[in-house]
Image 1 (cartoon, rainbow, N blue to C red):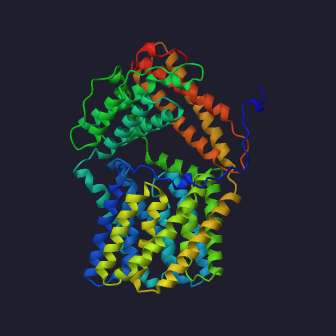
Image 2: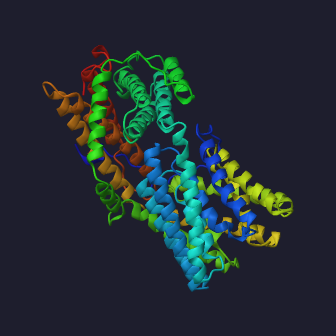
Image 3: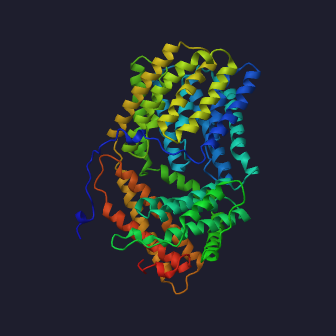
Length: 572
């Protein structure tokens, strides 16, 4: 078969949407957690500085306070390590910015440093998959610090303030473990149950992909949560039910076979999800067939994870940043786009063009299409946010407590709104960022507003132009590697199924490996599909691999007894 029969052509330049990126979505089921965390983590140092009449130092404590936005989707054991890493990274970024600001007053040099920092922060956040809010918080803080008046002797004290506020953020984000230590795992399990219910209600490629990803995320949360507890055991049984519902309707992946009718009741799955999210006891469903084998496999994988050293994780991180990594083109986009945005802003007469750097850095998503969406959202949100700032500025200048109150309010509002759509959250982020400047002294309102509008337009325009011109042809390479990995994972699962008496641990490991590869394949395909200047993508191969992979997952579930053999047609 010739290569042209399995590869589909797509235009190098794709049409960019105008309306869809601005539509509102349902809010996240945990929006209030980062919102409340950042309010508490910000209020404590702000009020302490107010008590000693040193509100001019708020910028340095805010760098640590904003670390409270990270890690809320992680189990507490992982969260403690992740947020500690965020705090250390923030202190390092601040150190570079403050030292650079104290050694030179050249705006051109500071723009270059800011662009390099933004590129490094983007690559590091993508490599570690730290999750939202990603690198934009780091870039916002370190870019602002570059243009703050600084003396070298002040740097240690300012870094100490950042570290102290970061410790408060760590305590705020990890502290709820004392009250509800399985909270993140409960939410991940509830999402898996809801996704499985959505798939059972409306079987199809979209709902199946979402359910596979949600079940995979739930298992990853439970595996990384620490030692098993009675609550985690109950959650594992619930995820087994979600997985059984997903496997029971696997035939919808085939274009020639009708969808099987899963035995699971979607209303029952949704009821379990509601109870799991609530503060009461975790529901105890009847054991699904094969549950004991499934949990035995989970215990085996958990034990294997404990034997892996952190050195392996560091090596994986270094490989993701090494030459040939698909992250390098994204880093190049950020570097070029931020540098150009800063220099254009400087040429336009903006004295401290850090907001142009931040605007450009915030645009860069996984591909050009998503970056275009973010450019529209950021521009609209910032322009509306400037109007909000103009309205509240006179009131904020009535006293320091009013200024602190507005900053806390907008910090909460940003997290409450941003999961609906990025532009909606930006309406709150923009006045908060501008009000922070007021702690160091008042500025002419017209100058603040004019510079912010100009920087927004320049940053968005130059940033998206760089995204379109700096190619990322490695996206197609990542897709091909993911496709090969999925083929290997499926072959491994088929081999495990062919064994005369496969062990539960072997079947479970094979199924989990295949599930992870299918999730990675879908992510790689979505990324490559929205990228410009790509070579032809193997769309037919991707679809065939997904269909075959889902049938094999169902076959392994049948072999383990998670679903009845009558629901499986035997094709793997």
